[in-house]
Image (cartoon, rainbow, N blue to C red; front, side, top):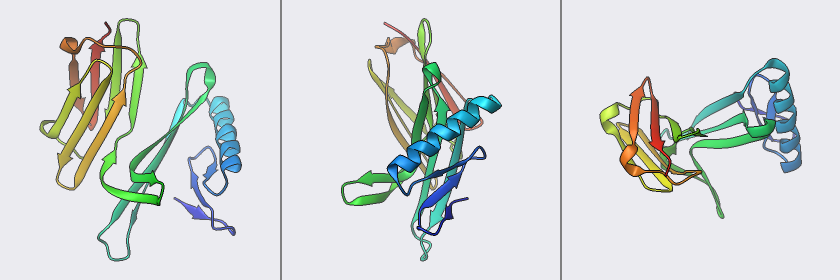
Amino acid sequence: MPEKNADENIEINFGGGKISFGGLFQGLGNVIDLMSRMEETGQDGVSQEQEFTSPSGRVKAVYGLSVKRGLGGRPTVESFGNVKKTAKGPVVEEEREPLVDVFDEEEQIVVIVELPGVEEEHIHTEVQEASITVSAVNGERKYYKEIALPKAVETSTVKSKYRNGVLEIRIGKK
């Protein structure tokens, strides 16, 4: 759960430690500490999601962070949800950005997209040579994400499966 400290900084506890959004350098230090604790405990990644509702109950904001150990043990921090950062400050959008993992395997690219609360028939994917667009609408759940691919792919080789809120897309490389 988010906690506020005396300086009104928002902190999220990932189980392995807290990340503060109060100061950029403090936050980066906390990410590095979290990665060290993840390495000590053998964890490859952690994620945390929070929902906030406005006092009127009309606006529902979902924001989350995923911290993973990437290539060479480097930390990768990815945000997801429907809170977007703009020049005018944070904006709550109708569509959530799903959590995505992209794996560059020997002969193919594998994309994993988390779409909880959505039925398979409501998912739409568009694959291009260098990117994939995933969208889904099921009641109040709306997702949208454009995903850059690490290598060019052969769009005719797309295979996908969906199970328990997780979409897996496999595409052969060019």
